[in-house]
Length: 479
Image (cartoon, one colour):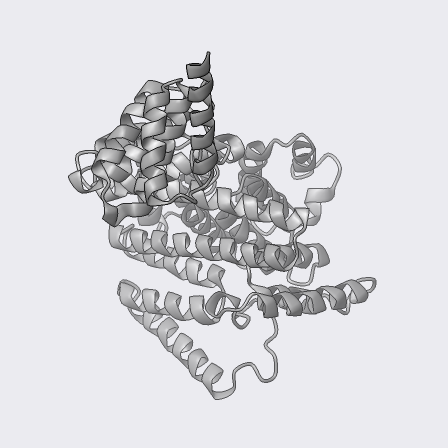
């Protein structure tokens, strides 16, 4: 077996880390999309049918926050804003109580399946909502996890455990003001005062460390109490704008621009969850319009990148196993979500090689090299990308131990990449030289590593590898 280095950063992510790595087939995606459209069309007149359609969507794609928000909205329409429920999840022998047993054996998908059945009868069961949020967190379905937690908070705004879990999630995702609001809400609960004050102080420090605006901004409506000086005239003006946009939506519910502008304001000055909820309403109001769906996808990708950025800052400030684990989970979730989005776009635009290239890069990062190879080979049709794509193909083939195919692609990359793509050219020369050495082709190894040394003698360990090749040749000649 050739002695080769790791393929290339970013480090591959175990595709079994999240069910999103196992992508839905195009046929299944189409079926769920049709169910969603039927549910959306029938929601105003036949809410029970809409609930059944949205339930199928959630069960088929539990990480899709749009499907989940549509289901919860339909349930609220049917049952009204009830605040009851929650204790049933902790009663021995109850249907919701079985979720605890499933969690003990890590049956996360089964928790979601049984939880949907419970919510269809009692949508305000916050114990069930917390269990489903935890299951989504374990599966790295963070958008859905956020939605379940927000629903639990709506159902039980004063419950200590609900606020504790919401605060942890919000802090992990960089929404420090909202996390603080959760602790403020329960700070007077007996036995929680000291813990709440400690967490508030810690979050204030983290907020200072993670410099930024927008998604770390002021608490949004319905999330927590606003500080007395929360923005002054500027905050008042933004609140007026939010109210005006909400009125416009109420008066003209099919005009999508007001939804998009409101989402902009909420993303910047309130919470991601509120902005996402508005976009979900825009999607429903537009009849699942493709432009709105892709607008929402772009935002979700940006939010995922922001979460990773926050986690990186937290790890820089405090290098702990917990922060390292959080960063790894968020990176895996980001890659998996990007795979999902770009897969859908490739299905919509099969001739668009840019989307296919982006999908192939994410599949490679997720460790799904065999599938990435198929898409990279399609992208070879684009002559402008030949060098870069050949390099990526070489690394993928090397990962699945097809060394001759890997070498062929590295050579193609070296021949195609120009000085304008110098970093890629140096990487291709390094890969070709190292793999040739592993295949006992010393002349080829000497050729490519010498070319690399001529460009950058300090590149990685090229100098040491050339010394070893020279010593090996000298020993062979002496023998």
